[in-house]
Structures are given as C-alpha cells and as structure tokens.
Length: 185
Image (tube, rainbow, N blue to C red; front, side, top):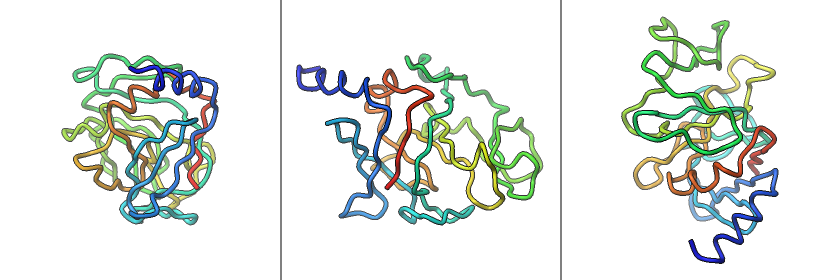
C-alpha cells in the first residue's frame, strides 16, 4: 500500500459510520464513502427505496448497524475484524418466507419454506455481513437477507443488499465493529 492509502485506513479506523449513496450515473450502483476513501458498490436491481418490501429488489434507505458475519472457510481465512464471524456450512440458509416464525433469520437446511442458501457457488457470500435491517424489530414483508457482501462479475446488481469487491471488503473488515453503522442515503 502506498502512504496515501495507509493514511486513509487510519482515518477509517476512527469512523463509526459509512455512507452509501447511489451513483448518479447508474441506478444499480453506489459509492460507499468511508472517510476519504470511496469504494464502488453494487446495490439492488431496483435501486434504493425508502419503502422496502420483500422481493422488490431494492436496497433499503436508512441507518443499519453491522451485527455479525459469515465466511466461507473453504475459500477464505477468518477475516480480521471485531465483528463476530462464523464459518458457513452446507446446512445454513436464510428464511425469506414472510409468514414464517423465523422470517429473516438463519435456518438449518433442509427447510420447507422460502429461503436462500448461505453456501453459494457464485462467491457472493464468501464474506457476508448481516445488516440490522428488519432483524431486531421484524415486520412481515419488509425485506429479509439484507447483507453487506461481495460483488459479482461486473458489479452486477444485488437483490437488495450492498456489495463491494473482495479486495475492498478485506481492506475494510479490520475497521468494522458491531458499533459500525452503514447509512444508505
């Protein structure tokens, strides 16, 4: 790393909030601002929404704490961070069935209701951080599985999450903690 990047990382360490703003040129892209560091990000295929609904493909506007995370131990070493991180296994899924009692929660597979697998082939969840969207105070149909994870090829849009490339994520992780807030504006 060069001296300028090292100086930016020192400033990031002291920050408690990261800002995500829609890229004015592209609806499905955003810029994540962490101190003086700006990182390109992918957001939902429907852009940003102040009225998030299950399945709408939008990234919710608002302030969300980083709660904890997951990683693929077969693909990455446990990343250095102050967030609690747990390895993903084949039986992990996330419930996206709004009428189920464990809506927007980690579930064990097989699971007979709507869910997504945490162990993905496309590498998006090789590092996956859980944002506090509709988790502490769950409300049916207001969105599930809103994560901060890795981007796909070409920064393809997400289903409502925020995604950055692997290099940027590994750079940010040491500076993230349960007190970190991601503010989507």
